[in-house]
Image (cartoon, rainbow, N blue to C red; front, side, top):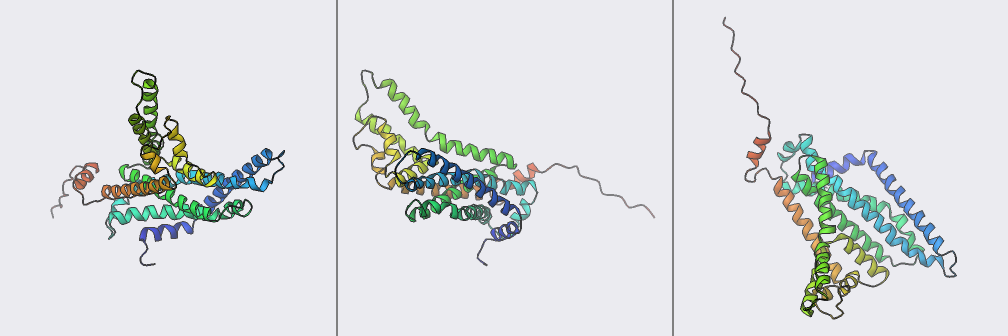
Amino acid sequence: MMWLNPIVKKDVRVQSRSMKICWGVFAYELILALVFFLAMLIIQQQNRYSTGNIYSALVWLYPVLAVTQLVILGVVVPVRTASSISGEKERQTFDIMMTTGMTPFSVIMGKVTTAIVQSMFFVVASMPIMALCFVIGGMSWSYLFFFLGIALLVSIFSASIGILCSSLCRKSISAVIMSYGFYLIFFLGTVLPCILYEILAESIRYSANGLTQQNIALGRDLYLFLLLNPAVYLAEFFTQIMAGESVVNSLADIMGSTQNTGLVSHVAVGHRWMILSTILFLAISMLFLFLASKRINPMKKGAGKRAARNMPRQGVQPMPQQPEK
């Protein structure tokens, strides 16, 4: 255990002795149980007049429970990491922590690893509920390990966003708000180029010049921005598992091109989209961690001036004079 990050050892040891982790697991399992029974009720209502086997419909419990857990992780993990560095600043223990022998990157990795361990602990605790759709529904057990990998990726990506915002802000509430602002950039900002092109293409589609094949191929390439969209990533993952189809190809075909042109048509073949998107998310996460470590580095240029500027100014008190004997 000597190789383990000291921050991870301390935080895990402290939180394992607290009742907060027990209540957190209880709330997590309660939400999953409610979603499970609600999904079972809907499946039963839809198959009431069906003569087929109702057990075959239980495979849809897998995407329902998986998406529920990933949404919870995406909401909770940034909140935990967004208060890690800014919380140390609010408690005025940040400077003491930076005087230790740990490097800034080790401090960042310790905070992020703690959040990832806690999130994966919740995911592993939910495996008995998740296993029902594999035992009863007849799905392959490999999909369960795929889900664990996706949950780990979501935890890393969300934790990197939270720790970057925590290093940029002095207040925890500001870091949390900024984290959800980053979410909006990834969820909506990546869709904006496609929407703008659709609006522009619709205005010139029936004009005298119209759209050439080169314009259509360029428009399809704009869908490469969706490689950084978490919602499209999850939709692609579950549709390929459940239906064997590609959501990205279906979205790109809306532009009216049925020919195999553009980069999207080549990237969306097989599992290329998932592999490339996973690499990009991991690269962005490492970039955010690097930027956060550079932000809190006390040895960087100008850090001393900012620290002195943030300190409250106090007047110089005169030395007390000794009374004459």
